[in-house]
Image (tube, rainbow, N blue to C red; front, side, top):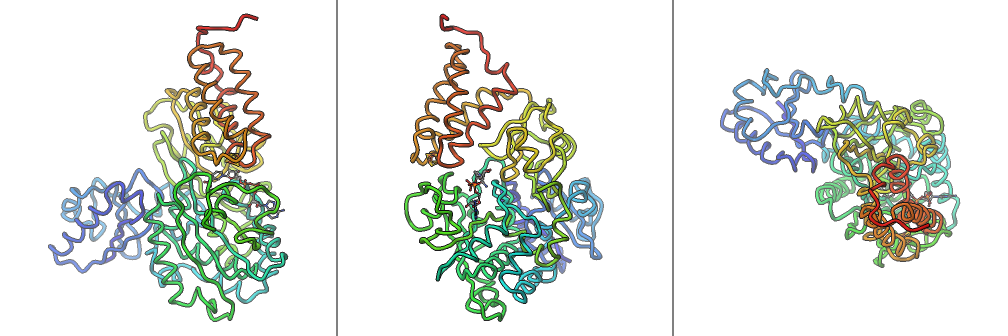
Length: 516
Ligand code: NAI
Ligand code: SF4
């Protein structure tokens, strides 16, 4: 019998380690012939720690399990899938999972993250094998035809980026995986690195073959110790198995990976600051051009892609471009792992084709707020994303539709707020976040964000609120168009959307109003 207990950081935070220990004790005490497998998370966080028992080829779930429940679960016959108040039935049949289209996350929570045999048994390496049989240009064309766009947030076509690097002259080329997942409410990159690290390694190896790069870096954050440990171990296993090294799967073509850890600055998720950090310099933004695709790491042509972009490549190479592009709508093709978080009943990872409406995601899939109060606002795309009011809940989740409503899908983080949220405070927070995290290179961001905090405070204290609202909007305009990178350039999104959609929160009774 196999019993699955997740080793994902979210499950660990909720007590999975204690649960695993309690299960091991019960197995020993009762003399069962059972093996505990530490899997990734299925992404249903309200059920974590979610324990699964494999019975006749089916996975029966129990959750959320506390260590004190374990003896009782064994008494109830959990080992044979027995009935219990925590029994959820077959995990694959849970509506939250059943409704998803899991392409990138197909194995996450299903397999043992560090078992190559498990990885291959569930379709792993088929994409890389196919890529090896093709020329670089053919691989780039396949990825271009799939319609895959950068899942880090900007949505730039991955195939076109790869072609730029393939065509660039350079003795050395690099693949850099941006795993500096800093957006509030996001965890997709972490879940892949902890739950299915080989898919990222495979995606990076394919990217190397496609562009002529022989070295890759995974740049992740110090706040992700479990992801760092799992990725590092997985790279070692892949190297031993000949997936990485001087001859990738015997192809005669070299590719290897190194895992690097950042020191915690949000701006190091910006690609050029990330490159500086990788080079051992201060994490400060570089002016573009030159694009990293032309002159990136150590001045060499470099592919920088987000974890999810790279982890989506193996399924594209395995099943073909047409299969992938068949999902989605408009220019947003394939699937997107939504990360539903904040004040929401069913928080977690939901991979689906582009096109679901925001309201459907929040109200139906997320189940509304956990406090039971009405949803007031949803911030989409991290701390630099816009706040959407209920009035915009019909917006389909895709790059263009969100841009048309002055928003962005970003890395697909969705943070829900109930009607107790004070949107002026949220706007102030955006400015404060920018002030704290600014790399300091350009004036609109470095100075503007601090002036933004002061102006928001004046409005809150009723000091010339009408004048200061105009000033705040003007400042946002300057930051949006005058900043060098997205940190200063996108901070206006949360501020302006809060002001536009929730004007009542920006209209305190004036203590002082300017004499006109
Ligand atoms: P960008 O639009 O400047 O560039 C997008 C990507 O395309 C870059 O890698 C750029 O080098 C590349 N590119 C552009 N033109 C190219 C060409 N002609 N050939 C080859 N490559 C080309 O956007 P940027 O500043 O890189 O990213 C901004 C986004 O980052 C925002 O949309 C935001 O949502 C997202 N973001 C994500 C975070 C996360 O934690 N994942 C955190 C903060 C922001
Ligand atoms: Fe640095 Fe901010 Fe300018 Fe970006 S916008 S380069 S973070 S100062």
